[in-house]
Image (cartoon, helix red, strand yellow):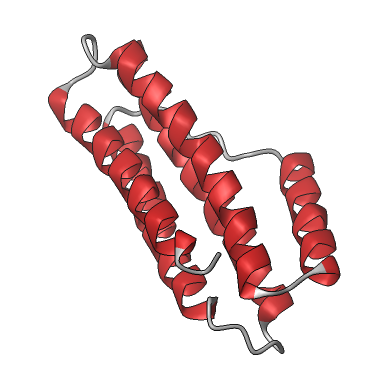
Length: 145
């Protein structure tokens, strides 16, 4: 059971952090004329869906849901602000997102390998769906490079 929770907590925290950072990115791009804004919005909403699904699984198991700490969120917000300020081209935004999502997908792949034999099938399916979603987003973002 502990393995399920660690896998679900990882999905929850990764999706929560990605949703938060994409929301901030949208704020910084609000007055800009970027073609990538639609994909940013779509990606943000999909991360929200994964966050909610992981949260639902955790609640079903009566597990505490631990959000990402405020300092990490603040640092991410400042990093995004700095990047957008220096170059807000679609290519630069795509590169930034690809790097972030890639880190998340690598970590997700490791978690799946760590827990695939000890996790229940429903939670493992959610993790694999999350990984597939991340990989598909990276491919979509590459078109903006």
